[in-house]
Image (tube, rainbow, N blue to C red):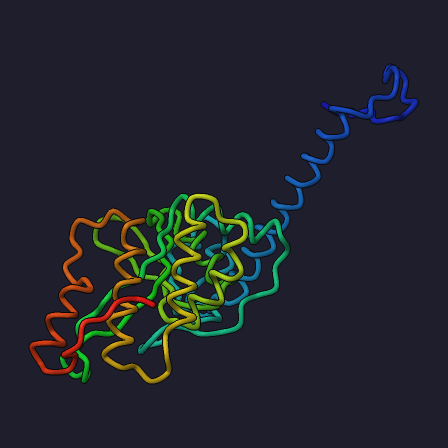
Length: 250
């Protein structure tokens, strides 16, 4: 069966030219085909990295991509730390899609992390996390191919996480996505402010000021398990004679 979409043509039976809904429908179809082609191109690129010594040609298909694992891809997982690269250039449509993904199935977090080997006791960690079921792991591989930072981890509860950790890495991603975010736009702004204020050389006063900003960002995430707060940091600094003076954000 052949479908004809007559847009301003003289095809027999086409009737009068239509330049309203028909044009919009045609644009939608073209956009959809382009997206399908982009995904197909990505799959082909992933398959290119598969080791032929272990997988036969018949095994290298889209259905088996979720079973391959990152260590057999070109951007393999490092044993220590996370993968760091340069964010791939992308058009507004791709950036908007990733922003929507982060809005719906992701999180932006600023945390106070206790480090017994750190002179001030606490450090600030910023992370961006995307979540999907194991069965949809390939979309996280695609995200990592675009953003070029972070690592992918399979949890024991059937979920997979793509995590980007670090001030510089998070700033790059948030600066790219923040203009297109909806639900997490304000949170992204607050985290970017926190990153911008983070000094190269930390002091007790600056740590407490930033800890209060971390508390502010936590209000967006509704975390019930959070125990490290600015008040905990304040007590630690006082107990260790590191911060004898009261202060607040200026």
